[in-house]
Image (cartoon, rainbow, N blue to C red; front, side, top):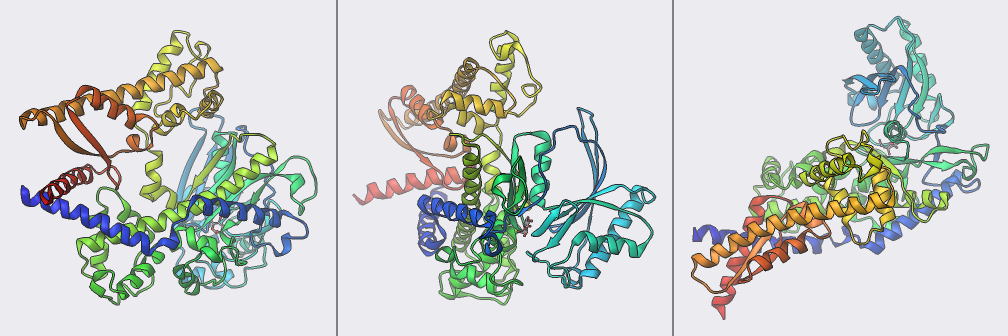
Length: 602
Ligand code: GLC
């Protein structure tokens, strides 16, 4: 037992030490709030340049008009085919949109391979491949004799003058087929289909994936006016006032702008923030000097960034006792999916050990901790960068509308955003929200809330995620904002309703904190009794999103323990890595050991 505790203690010590070392080593990858604000402002200037008549031809952030003038209004219906080329998969979908309230959209889809020799070959080969896959899909769907409208999601920068024409400005990400840049991709695809001659297709629109995302989200939520992709590449679109878009005639209404923010920094405006690793990634890429922001933030490069950092650290003897293997030196050997797995709170260290062992570097436990921290720093930088540019778009939308506060919806998609554990954490729902919802239904039934009307939203399980509870309860939030949050959830109500909802949220989480506190008090008091002590000093490791993110939870929790176990002084310590119960226990044991050692030394 003692051996295990000592081990745990050394583990904790080791960990603190390791993490501090890495933090210092990767100092240039960690941004302060001021730097992030600065990035946001630089991006705002780039957006201005991309929109202005004189500045747009040379602007790095292209701000491409999409000729999409509104988001769906829910009246859409029909049977469509969608081609989705340029993300992590090439997919073809059949989408049926109906007026059926329960299931307005039905989809069937198939993923097709796009081998490297095709995406790096000639344009005609690439579009022949797309036409072959579409033929196969229509055959399987038994619609080869029909001329169903096709929407083409083509996730690259395109200059458009209308919806069904799109001239590729430049390839990005992994694509580099010859003879396509400067050409209209609708024309290229039509030609390839005609060459086959066994079916017809009516390509109605070409859209960027960001625009597709905004539309999908807009179908459910009319307020959606921004679309973001955080995947192989990263990019965003948003609804801009037509009067600000110099390249398009007309002043009335709005048009969706594809920002192509991946190219932010291509004119040197991010040089002070790029590291030697970013430069190396760029040098080894198929498009050096291009998409510099994307190379710092998107999924395609994250694994490689981590690998380059590990190589350098190993060369300097800071990792793997200086062992460098051919695998570690091989480009692409660490993929973004490994980075995500390594950062998982529960099995991350095990995954890290597996990944590094595959590279043959014979990692120690200490190495695994270090590498896990490197991964966290790289992905936090990515999340920070993307949050800054999104901040730029939101600030612009707010100014455009001339409002003091902006209420909006952002549609997000992309493999990195969906698969990465650290993003996941911020969105996870919990039980407290469900309790709140049940109480609100009850109060509404009794006529105390929402004029007695139980809306469809209120009937939906899971609408109240814990993050909403935390927001609603936050002291800094004025009632109007509580109301805005409720409206976002589709729960329009009066100010009085907001007061009641805030009160309910407060009561539910106070109760939860008190229950936890009472349990904890019983445990620590029992320990005190068992040891026959009058007074107990004890440290407890705590973890969990509720504890960390909720504005009051930890305070109420601690207060309750204090009141219920007055003979115990409990010191709460936030565990560093996620919700892993094991990590919280190790932290607690480690701290106790540390205190013991300190006492013995005195
Ligand atoms: C790249 C493309 C852009 C796309 C993004 C996400 O940045 O240039 O058009 O939206 O990747 O797929």
